[in-house]
Every structure is written in C-alpha cells, then in structure tokens.
Length: 85
Image (cartoon, rainbow, N blue to C red; front, side, top):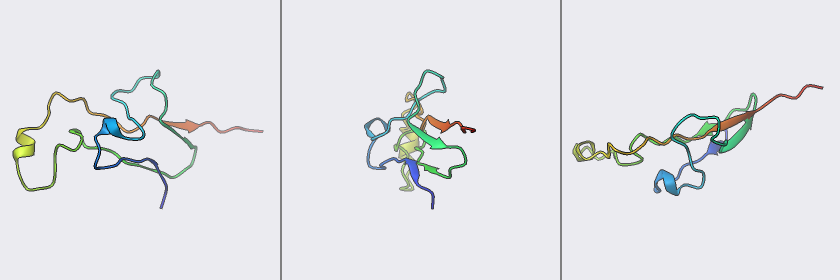
C-alpha cells in the first residue's frame, strides 16, 4: 500500500496537525509535501467541518454545524520535475 504523505490524526483539529493544510489555491502557498512524478501515495483529507460531523446517528451535529468555518484542504502537494540527461 502506498505511503501516506499527508497524514491526519483524527483526534485533533486540522489546525493542531503536524502538517498544516491550506484554505485556497494560490501560488504563494508553499507545498506541505513533495512527491516524485509517477509516485503512488495517499493523502488523508478532513470533511468540511473538521470533525464536527460524527457518525452517531444524531442530526444534532448537522443542526449545529459550524457554518462560518473555512474548509481546510490537505496539501499543497508539489510534484518534482523530471530531470533529463
């Protein structure tokens, strides 16, 4: 199984993770990880509400969802350019 290059600890908020994500695509945001062209890898992703929606068969978490939060994204992930002779 491919390695996880962007791991998330499900017991922590996204802002408390070892690797921090981003909230928009912009060229000034530095890569959090780098992979090589052709690599197979895995990335952990968080749902929109950063753990506020849980699998407990209750609608309360939907009713009280933090709608003012910004969706954080895993990455950015850079792909190394191939070097030719």
